[in-house]
Amino acid sequence: MSLLEIRDLTVTYGSGASAVPAVRGVDLTLRAGQKLGVAGESGCGKSTMALALLRLLPASARLTGEILLDGEDVLTMKWGRLRAVRWAGASIVFQGAMHSLNAVHRIGDQIAEPLLVHGKVTPTAARGRVGELLEQVGLPAARAAAYPHELSGGQRQRVMIAMALACDPRLIVADEPTTALDVMIQAQILRLIERLVADDDISLLMISHDLAVLADTCDRLAVMYAGRVVEEGPAREVYDAAEHPYGRALSSAFPRIGDPASRRAPRGLPGDPPDPADLPGGCAFHPRCPVAVEVCGEQDQELREAGAGRHAACVHVGSGS
Ligand code: ADP
Ligand code: MG
Image (cartoon, rainbow, N blue to C red; front, side, top):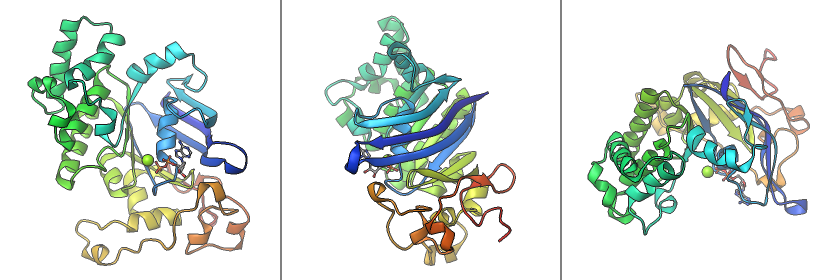
């Protein structure tokens, strides 16, 4: 069975004329032990989807569809059960560690809190576990006494990862975990996440605007555009040879190691992503698409098979053209 199965997930902020459809009918599957990357430009709905997984969205958000975690629907589960799932089922590492950590509490106390509340361990046992967790993420156990402002950005992100690991989750959701960090530190944090999920057989859902980072870290890759998944498949294949024209544009936007030509001339993409409150008709990508034909402006495309284990939502896919 899949660890996580998202079925026809739709999230709309607000209502009436000002409604923002941030996620529009997303289907995604993550098997136990798998690492799934979700890529797409800023504003395409990645964080909204991540927050929906643990029902962390503001009250103005309306959700439909199903989010099955180990077969249990997160969207309909009772509050008490949801609290348990938020720690032991899945936990989230966010982009800005400084905003997620409490500035006036020592980091050791912050890591210990879920252990005391959900893990039902004694304070002494929690202290011991905090030390272990800090060492697991490459920090000395003595750093437990530090306040967030005494740590560097990379160290704070390590603390966030320690917190996410505290209650032995089956799934870690990492939303742009390295975006706010220097390039050298980014690589360290990525390798750390990779090692931890491999050691403990944790599944990973990693979100990034950077396709290259995801192709490097994940087994599978989904590309989102304007609230929809437009392509999905094995990470390397999607990165190297995307089927959807948006996937191709996104992968060509990053220079490739060993390919100096790509460094000189990233093809990129003309125009801006659409405003979700005012989406173009048909396929939302068609105004920017280099291979759009007439039907693209009239009819949106569903994901369809595009080779073994691959799917893409484009009129040109599977049509032989
Ligand atoms: P991403 O993480 O891919 O950058 P988001 O999920 O943050 O995208 O945002 C998707 C869309 O939803 C954007 O148009 C954004 O402006 C809008 N949005 C995000 N959060 C809210 C909110 N709390 N209220 C209203 N609109 C929101
Ligand atoms: Mg985001």
